[in-house]
Image (cartoon, rainbow, N blue to C red):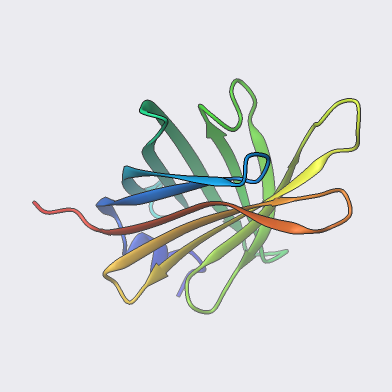
Length: 155
């Protein structure tokens, strides 16, 4: 079984709820969300495209995931209209036994040091897909940033 096979089994459309946690304002914003999981190049890559909203403004994002078997690492490129704007975040991480992928990246916060970002994409029992993202301070403290739970979309 390839490291991305469990995710590939989740190909198709998903609907759910996205929760954005804003630690600077100590509030959360929930919105309807959709996701589309697509295997690419014979399953060597998986792309997650998702939509959500913040204060009623439409947002979207995409995560392209690959797996390098020789070093046994997951690679990912993440873009998002609200978080990343015009930048692409490159991430690396692991494929877990349950089919989840966990990747880490970082982003600039001038004039201070870079902050970290952890993304977890987890297939749950074939009926649920979870996308969770964490902000990581330069001191290594993690805070929940995004939590999205999806169910298979109705045909």
